[in-house]
Figure 1 (tube, rainbow, N blue to C red):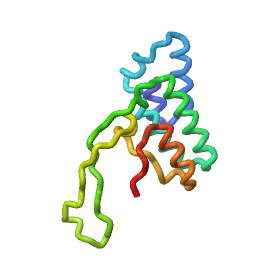
Figure 2: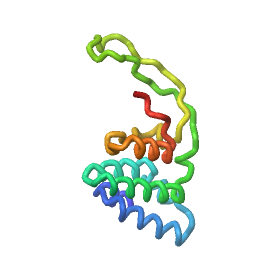
Figure 3: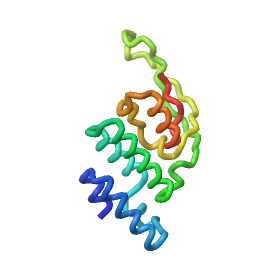
Amino acid sequence: AVKCLLTADQISEAIALCSKRSKANKDTAEAKSMGSQAKDFFRVAAKTAKGQKESDRCKSFYHLHCFLKQYDPTCFSLDKRKVKVSRMEDKNKSAFRKDISTVIVEQSVLAHEIRFPDELFSSLQYCRKFRSMFGYAESVK
């Protein structure tokens, strides 16, 4: 049921259902094993946030963070992984050159699995706050 709600972009309903289940049996392992992972909730939250005002986006992401801390706290565990980063500063240079570096970045497991939607937050302060809350490394610009 949760997976169907997420597929239909009904994030609030999916969170409510998972919250009721976790209160009833205190075990979310079953729900997570059936495809309802932190990255699925995050992806849907980012998708639905595009149609919201920024204040509502902030509330939605805060609500999602509170939910994920209970539902899957391991998604916030820090993990070091290799990440490819573009070194190309001049966009007029040839794209055929290999201007990519591999660096080791420490950020949350969730952050390694899904890109943060920086474009949803016009306020740099809010963007940084939510990146930090979800365990994303500082944005490289």
